[in-house]
Amino acid sequence: QVQLVESGGGLVQAGGSLRLSCAASGRTFSSATIGWFRQAPGKEREFVGAITRSGSTTYYADSVKGRSTISRDNAKNTVYLQMNSLKPEDTAVYYCAAVQSIVILTREREYEYWGQGTQVTVSS
View (cartoon, one colour):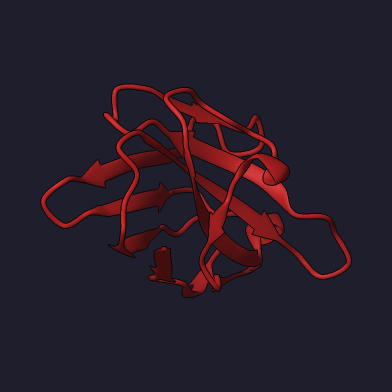
C-alpha cells in the first residue's frame, strides 16, 4: 500500500508562484514514476507533468512547459511541483499519482495510486 498526500496549495495572484508537495508513505515501488494532474470544475482531469524514479527524466504538458519544474527530495521521499507565472486558467485541484514504471507516463489510467488533491486558485 502506498499513500500520497499533497500540500502547498492556496490562493495566489496571477503572475505569482507556488510549490506543491507530494509526500509518500507506506510501501514504495522499486521503480516508480510520479505524475501531477489537475482538474478544474466541469473539466476532465489533465496531465501536468511527471518525473521518473531516479529523477533523471521529467516531462511537462504544453500548458505548463517552461514555467513549471518537477523535482524530488530522496531523503524526504517527496516530489515537488514548482509553478511560476501562474495564470487564472491554472486554477484547479492538483493531484499527484504514482505507478511502478521506469518511463514517463501521461495518461490518468496508467497510474495506480492517488492523493486527495490540493486546491490552487489563481486570481486575475
